[in-house]
Length: 140
Image 1: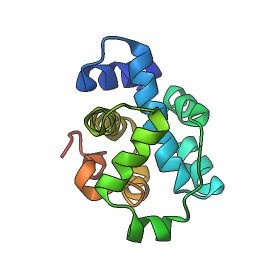
Image 2: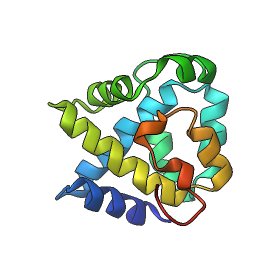
Image 3: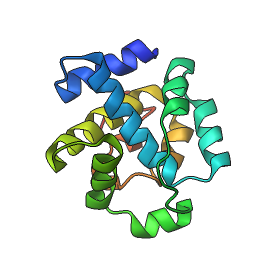
Image 4: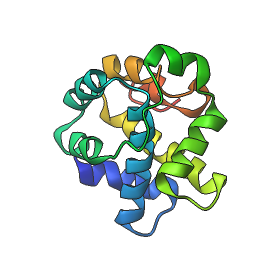
């Protein structure tokens, strides 16, 4: 999947009229996920993504470093994750941030190999993501 395909999926799922809105959503969600990863884990994830999607991953800023994956599993619930995305993307509402999360995670589930999906599913609350279905050809 190319970045155009990835961003097109985000744009369509999120109901965004502009690609820059889809890119903002991707950066917000990726920044939130990356904040829970060690730098080495983030780099390993970047290497598993298709080249164009990995560039979006690379350019997503990290505004805060929240902790390790083990900490994230215990502490990061769906509401907290969405609130972090809301902060990262400077969305006006929780609903806008949730739309960003859902659209990006659906596109990501189609772009990553199943072994990356397993790792990523530890970073993202299970209730939010179709990532567990990645590699099976459909979103959950």
